[in-house]
Amino acid sequence: MKALVFNGPRNIQYESFDDPKITNNSNLILKVEKCSICGSDLHMYHGDVLGPKLDYSQPMAKFCTGHETIGEVVEIGSGVSTHKVGDRVLIAGGMGCGKCKRCLSGQLNICEQAASGKPALAYGITPGFNGGHAEYMEVPFADIGAAKIPDGVTDEQAILLTDALATGYYGVKMAHVKPGDSVAVIGQGPVGLMAAEAAMAVGASRVYCIDPDETRRNLSLHFGGIPLSPDEAIERIREDTNGIGIDAVIEAVGVGPTLKQAVRLLRWGGSLSVLGMLQKGTELPLQIMQAKSLNFHAGVSGIVSMWDELIPLVQAGRIQGKGVFTHEFSLAEGAEAFRLFDAREDGVIKTMITL
Ligand SMILES: [Zn+2]
Ligand SMILES: [Zn+2]
Image (cartoon, rainbow, N blue to C red; front, side, top):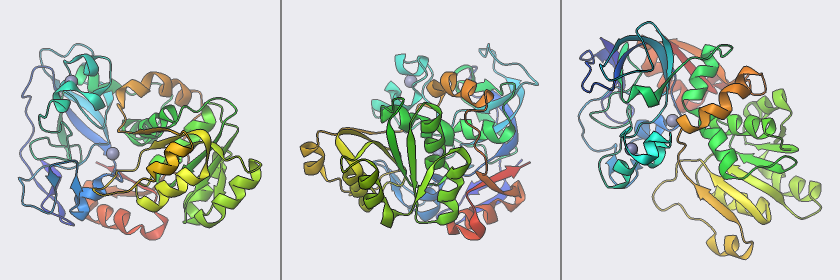
């Protein structure tokens, strides 16, 4: 088959790769219809270090990239009970062992196997776990990690449910957003944008959408967000909250200056939820966080456990994801899709790769 293959930093190529086979009876084979590139794929693209061990600047075995994928089931393992050949499914953008207590409750992000030091179970990100930027992919633990594309959900929305929307919603939950709350989302890439729309959907009274890029922040106008540039954010939010500060901040960038800004924006006792992928050595103003008695959470979404709440909100039109997909490519144009997405050229927010 053909796939996008990681050959090293800034070197993801469209090339031939072995067809996937079912290696475990709880897995299925997917014929990929559409896939997208995630902001977190750019760490791989840049040759960054992720987690304690994964250093993309070092030589590693080739693997197919991609963890945001939808498609048609073409083969199932004998242990798969909830899918059949011909179903159209969306795939959770992360996996676990599928057997431990956490995985069985849908919290694949805190799988006990990963916690016990086994290699990260993330496909499309590590050698040995091939992803969905490919004509075919093996989907692990398919009863948990795949879901039929629900009625009333578009292909674009299904792709958003594989990661960006589920991650954004996780950020909202971890920031304990309640009806009436004021919320700021820092960073209006796809995840930040989805977090902002989700915060609105669960009843936030005001959602400030902060990004230096005017086109990005203005996308939030679709769902009633308040776009702000980083320079005006502190003053405007202080003014709007009578100097008290905001109830919740979702940080979707993951660098020191935006984390610091998040802490400044919050009221005493407010909640900070960090979705941005943190790099080694990123600093947090812990002393100020303690003085303000903040609630703090940093984590990676357990995608699957978000679906029960999110899918009805999408079906009802309360979350739409309007304007997120700006560019379309074929799989053969994947290297260019990565380049353009990384360079943020041509007003790109998110790319759709159609097979
Ligand atoms: Zn991702
Ligand atoms: Zn597990």
